[in-house]
Amino acid sequence: MTMRLFPAGRPAVCLAPMAGFSDRTFRILCREKGADLVFSEMISAKGLLYGSDKTRALYFTREGDEPFSVQLFGSEPETVARAVRILENDLGKKLLSIDLNMGCPAPKIASNGDGCALMLDPALAGRIVAAAVGTAHVPISVKFRKGWDAAHENAVEFARVCQESGAAFLTIHGRTREQMYAGKADRACMAAVKRAVGIPVIANGDVHDAKSALDVLRETGCDGVMIGRGALGNPFVFEEVRCALEGRVYTPPDWDERRETALRHAQMALYEKGDHAIVELRKHLAFYLRGAKDAAKLRTRVNACKTLEELRQIWG
Ligand SMILES: Cc1cc2nc3c(=O)[nH]c(=O)nc-3n(C[C@H](O)[C@H](O)[C@H](O)COP(=O)(O)O)c2cc1C
Image (cartoon, rainbow, N blue to C red; front, side, top):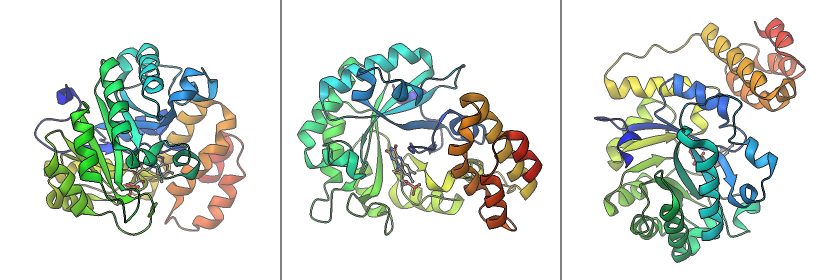
């Protein structure tokens, strides 16, 4: 079932689900630059059931989308199963796979028993995976962490439960919930998860260029890498990693190309969501501006823009 998801003959390169960032525009750009699999930002299973417009807007697109993977969060097996059916109904062939978020550390998610809190209850997590797999026509994957905290590092046991419950592949972020994003992602933990299961495992955490991708793949034996923060303002990272994996020479973009990509990102996002989206676009633009000459000054001016035309005048 995972055959059509993963490229043949080389590890997969994936865009991470990132709330507030991995929207349709960013997914399309990252695909263009070489990402094999792209994941939506996390979507509430309950929100889907309640038919919230805000929730639907996170995955529903005005036009045809490249096939993509949607990430769901929820902690009730039946709710998740019903959300899976809604997604399949709404998205049809655009839906490549569904990922279950069992790694989110955010207090508002974990304190409800969702996200990484499920790592404290592997049996419930297994029932959720089984319920999703039981109803889905697309592969179901799980993204999780090293554990809840230093006293509860159960990634290996958790991975086995997910596999036994029918998960098609796994993504392991090598940090505990307690660590949030601090410290280094633990590659030994990723390697242990890979050794423990027979399904594909994607390594996640601190991959931001070709070297870190090749290093993590070599050290863990994983079947792919997932890139989050390293892709912000830098969708070129997918091309960089693909070149390294395929033995091609990578030519980094110059500032003109970076600016062109940022402006195209803006154009696509505003077309998709309307002019008001310029506010939420600012955080993406700030990442594109990192390292630019006079970045701070330019950022202040970019943040004052209300339309694409103004943006082009200032930054074009
Ligand atoms: C702004 C932001 C939003 C995120 N949202 C999600 C999310 O919706 N679902 C999820 O599973 N992980 C989410 N993550 C975690 C990332 O997917 C990833 O696991 C983490 O950033 C580590 O990878 P990296 O070092 O490549 O960034 C988010 C991370 C960031 C920085």
